Image 1 (cartoon, rainbow, N blue to C red):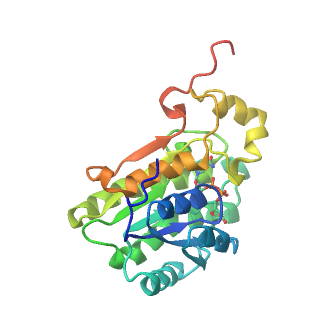
Image 2 (image 1 turned 180 degrees about the horizontal axis):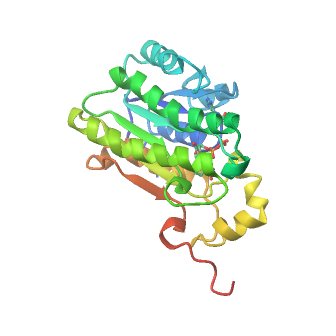
Length: 253
Ligand SMILES: NC(=O)c1ccc[n+]([C@@H]2O[C@H](COP(=O)([O-])OP(=O)(O)OC[C@H]3O[C@@H](n4cnc5c(N)ncnc54)[C@H](O)[C@@H]3O)[C@@H](O)[C@H]2O)c1
């Protein structure tokens, strides 16, 4: 349950905050006392910022210079950053044979390179000790899942980036972790959730037999951003209803 004082006095940045997991995370951090800078390429991010009493920045995280623009905005708004949630991402990738250069570039640029660049550019502002970085990876970056190649490769990169950076920053008192969501009910999965292959391959073998809500990912992100996770570094926590652990279809199927 939210604790209104858990993030009191802390400054947070959430990318991809216009909707879905990012909006739920911004709301959760704000409900627990954080001041939140909500970032998204969709101008609707203003609505999330208004709902959480925070600030909005319309920004394409993959654009050249995006990290510096974000650092400038964070410096002006807060002076320092306690929590960075790298959540912005795109879905809908294809098998490799159907992936042209533009598609590969779009997925790697947005879902992987932007995470590295933005994090690097915010490093000087991160609180030491006490800073927290939470990346949003995916179960599809943890095991092979044919058909989403560029997406899965980018998300595997985010998971490895998390482990890599955890080792670099923990000695400075900054903890870096990630969540790997399974099927979550957001716009990204709207189409998939009606798709027979997706239902058979992902939803049916999810032991909890349902998709997750964005708030069920946001609560784990909030845990990783909190003092309760003071001895957690470099972890990639599945938030997937058990899919990665078990991946078993109903017995009658
Ligand atoms: N929904 C799922 O089942 C699921 C599963 C695993 C991982 N994820 C990851 O969770 C994160 C959030 O996804 P979601 O499900 O909430 O999807 P969503 O489509 O509802 O939200 C994604 C948000 O990111 C923003 N965004 C996309 N590209 C951007 C860019 N270049 N610059 C700035 N903002 C950008 C979008 O405008 C949108 O507001 C993504 O990284 C996604 O890969 C989602």
